[in-house]
Amino acid sequence: MPYRRLPKTDLARLSALQTLIEKGEKDGINEPVVSLRLQNDAKSLLPHYEQALFQYNEAKNKQKNNNGKTRNSVKMVRLYISHFIQVLNMSIARGEFKKNVKIYYELDPDTNNIPELTSEKSLLEWGEKIIKGESERQRNGGTPIFNPSIAKMQVFFEIFKDQQTEQMLVSKNIANHAVNVQKLRDRCDAVIFEVWNEVEAAFASLSWDERIENGKKYGLIYYFRRGENLENIAE
Image (cartoon, rainbow, N blue to C red; front, top):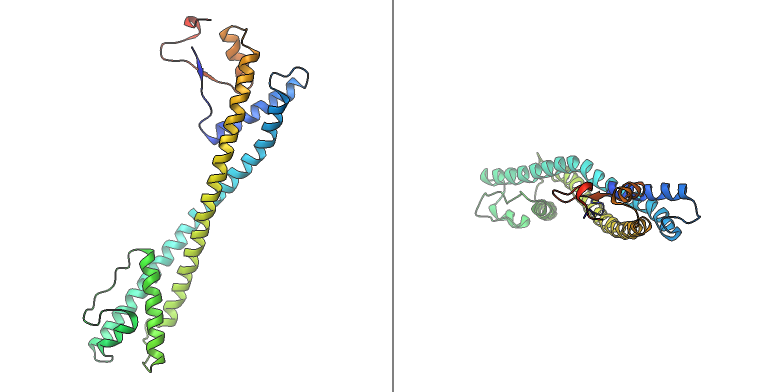
């Protein structure tokens, strides 16, 4: 026997709702194939579903557009943190600072290693440590490090933090919109399921080819199993 299958995509769901609404309006209110309750449910649901999808896609597009800016800010802040530590190490090597000044930055005085800076979390962590350490060292009478100065590094660090915060908010919005969209998908599927039940009941006395043709008018699509066709379907 032919079987029906609920829409699998948002576009197919929207199309099914729109088809029902348009056909219901043509049928009128006298003995409608689909109950007025379900027609009203579809009319109420459609704009909410469309709006939810729009908001969800807008949030995803915003995240995509921000990714380029975020990559650049990550690159720049990593460069400045790394460069600052290298200049600090060279200043110590030249005898301008004692190696123990590294304690201000929570760096190991006995090594010249650059900390791991591959993750955004590590950039946030070490950016804070370097800025705090340089400020504290200067408050205790230390001479500022230049090229790069801590002020210039902090500019890029603040840009990086702002973009991280924005991306977190965008990601949160995407997650919230995704939950709302899924709820509306479930509601849409429930309405379509009821509509198709009513359509099938309305045309149950007809032959299969007539049921299929009439069902299409209300968005109901039948699928044939392997080796099955109209000629070999048992009525």
